[in-house]
Length: 75
Image 1 (spheres, rainbow, N blue to C red):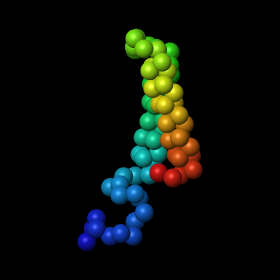
Image 2 (cartoon, helix red, strand yellow; image 1 turned 180 degrees about the vertical axis):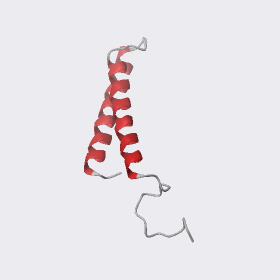
Image 3 (cartoon, rainbow, N blue to C red; image 1 turned 45 degrees about the horizontal axis):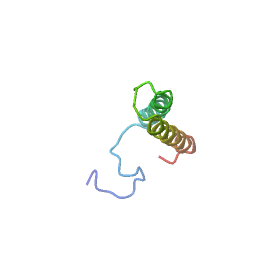
């Protein structure tokens, strides 16, 4: 039965072309890094600058982690 074989190793993802997954991954890395920088530079005018810096730092670290996983081909 199509869709129920366990021989494919795509992490449970539906049949999406590899190029589309690659471009989506690159796009998401850019988004995480960009939004993280926006938080660090306090573009969103959050009253507590420490919270803005922590959220921005976490987003940047997560963007770097996703970029590393994308580079190594883990996702």
